[in-house]
Length: 140
Image (cartoon, rainbow, N blue to C red; front, side, top):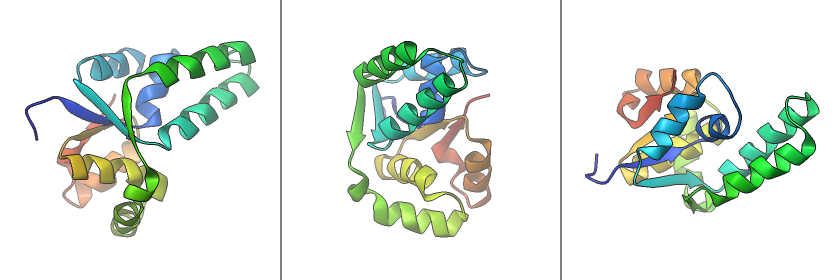
């Protein structure tokens, strides 16, 4: 891994920094400890979806959801276009037999030689099983 602390973050690492969840403190600490945050552009789609679900379930108000969305937009995340990662994400999805959405994040971590910070236990497990566990930092 490189000398600068760069990490890839997925929605399961970003959302707990916005909402009080099981891994909130750990997620905040992981993001704060990095010099650079990276993510495929789809991170904003997934964060928006999670905030909408939280509002539908009355865990937050729609106004709070919009405020949290604005906070997420201000996070210093360097985004990478999905089209730059789609071939690698597909190959990983086939190798891991796992969601291609999640594989976009892992593909970026591999391309940038850094770790993906995630709360997704299943992704961490399948990555470990195929020898890619060093690219995943599991929250929790």
